Image 1: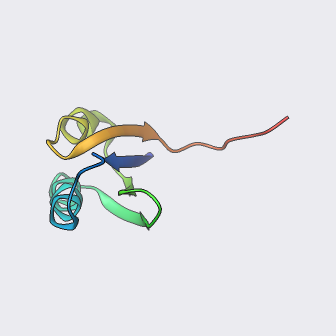
Image 2 (image 1 turned 90 degrees about the vertical axis):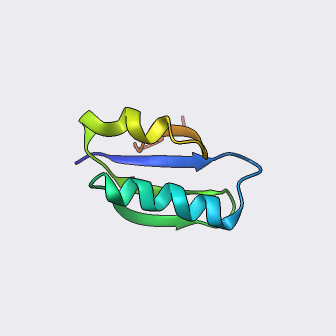
Length: 71
């Protein structure tokens, strides 16, 4: 399964972030990392269900986790 970076909405409470994580897990995802500087987490998630994650009420963005290079 691909890994995605999930960013929750700026005003999301700790309970709302937890609800987004639970939703991801309920849909077959596996949380691989929780971020402290942003309200978000990394999750291994089925590619065919990513739209259900991005449409969650507390989720701001879902991006495919990939390597970033500088020149």
